[in-house]
Image 1 (cartoon, rainbow, N blue to C red):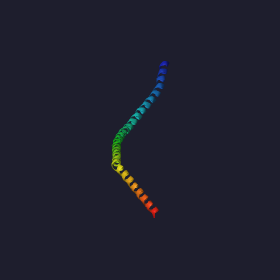
Image 2 (image 1 turned 30 degrees about the vertical axis):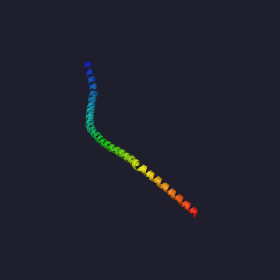
Image 3 (image 1 turned 90 degrees about the vertical axis):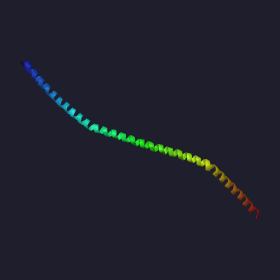
Image 4 (image 1 turned 120 degrees about the vertical axis):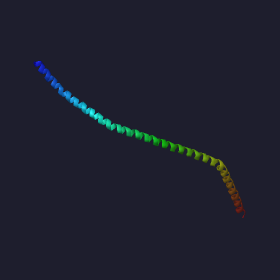
Length: 114
């Protein structure tokens, strides 16, 4: 009989921590559920933000491609201008320089002769 009473008391003493552990597990389950409920919308918003960022990157890629094409066109136009106008312009400048020097030489000779 004493052993049976001791066993009942032992079971009673062990039941209290088990009940408290059960409450802790219930609270943990509730916390995990709340965390999940708050995390899912954040993940959805993050996915939408990443998709929007990818769209913006595609737009930037289009703009940089267009800028590169404009740069190539300006470079080609500059080369064409230098080839068509640059050569004759240098020749005209050299000719006008020679004419100025020649007339400058005639004017200097005319001043000495006076």
